Amino acid sequence: MNKLAPRAAAALALALAVAAGGAAIATATALPLVAAAAPAPATRPAPVATPTTRAKPAPVPVPTTPAEPTPVPTLTTPATEPEPVPVPTTPVAVPAPIAPATRSEAAPTIENCAGAAQPRPTEVTLFCADANDTLTRIDWKHWGKGTATGSAIDVINLCQPSCVAGHDHNYRVHVTVSDLQSTKAGRRYERLTVTFAGKPPKGTSSVEHFKLGAHGPELA
Image (cartoon, rainbow, N blue to C red; front, side):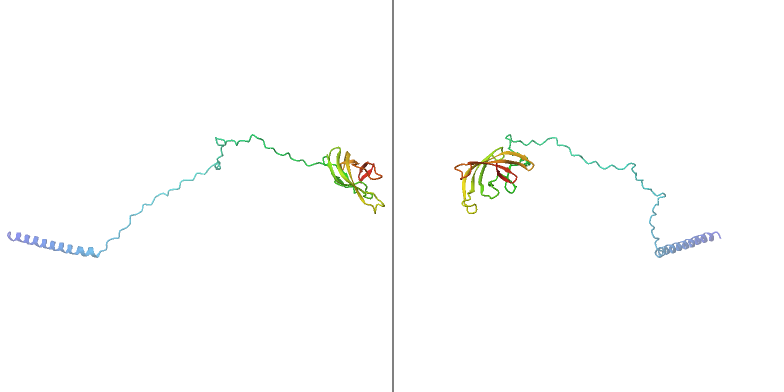
C-alpha cells in the first residue's frame, strides 16, 4: 500500500499536468480567434479643454476731450532772400497823361450865322443877310490866346450890275480875332478885324471891324 500511493500521486500529478497543458493550448488557440473577431475600439479624440471663464475684450478708452485737428505746417520764409533785380540807372521818360479839357479850358470859338460855335474855323461869313462877303481858307496862328491872327481870302460879290447878276472877287486879307470872353457856353472871341493886303474894293474901307455875336458877325 505504501508503494501504490506514490505511483497514484504521480499519476494524478501527470493527469493534472496534461489537463493543465490542454487547457493552456485551448486558451492559446482561442485567443487569436477572439482577437480577430473582436473589432478594435475606436480611437476617441483628445478632449478639448473648455475654459471655465470667457475672456472679456479689453475696454476701448473713450476720449474725454474732442480730438484736435492736426496742425497744418506753416510756410517759413527761406533764410536766403533772392538777389534784387538791378534797376537801370537811366530813367525812362514816361509821357504825362493828358487831362481831358474842361469847358473853361476848351478851345475858344466863333459863332457863325446859324448860332453854332466853331473852334478855329477855316471859313467865316461876314454878312449873314445875303452871304455876299465870306472869308475863306483862313490860316490861324496863336488860336486860343487872347488874340489870334491869320491870313485868308475874302470872297466878295460886288453886286454889279446887281447882286444876282454880280460876280465874286477875291482879295487877300489879314484877320484878327480878340476880346476873348468866358461865357456859360464856353470861351469865345467877340471881335473880328479884317485888313486888306492891297487896295480894297470900291466903297469898302481898308480895315473893317465886326462884332461877333450869337448870330454871326455884325459890322461894328
